[in-house]
Length: 223
Image (spheres, rainbow, N blue to C red):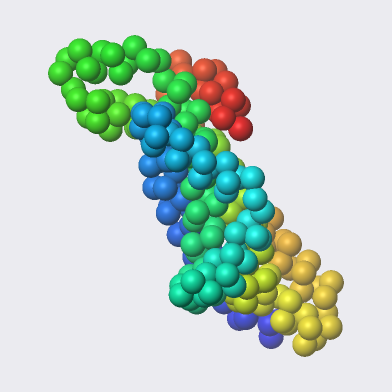
């Protein structure tokens, strides 16, 4: 198929957008979640404000602001950089809520015990709370990976040549809209199944016995 190299180029961009945004969003989400839970009134309020604004507005609008509105205040980004920034900021807000639910599902006695044996608050969070919270949030994190994979299709609006954009260009040239977009749909479906299977196995390997039900309740409340 003559269009396959172009589709593969688009797929490469899609995967780059997905994984970079996921990792960047994870670090942002950790900071926001810890700030919301342990940061005090002012820091917590700032984190809550950011999370609510991002979760309460469409990703497409956020991308438009970054790509089209930022130049008016002197900040001009390449299309792919704007896409990465928008996806990362959006993902960070959602991951923050997943992590907050995981943090709050951990028995408070663990923090008390850590402080009792001489750990500082920061050491207790770093060595006791956060490792468990990250493991507990893997199911929600896997959902975020799948969402991000599919959300990358939106960035063609700001001229990023990811998989959907490449498919659109090819279909416009060949008029094979059904064939091209059927192939794209199959690619997304296969990637979704593969990623879900890998993370499910990863989750089972790292599952913490005894925290499953409470973690589910915490994550459900966060959502």
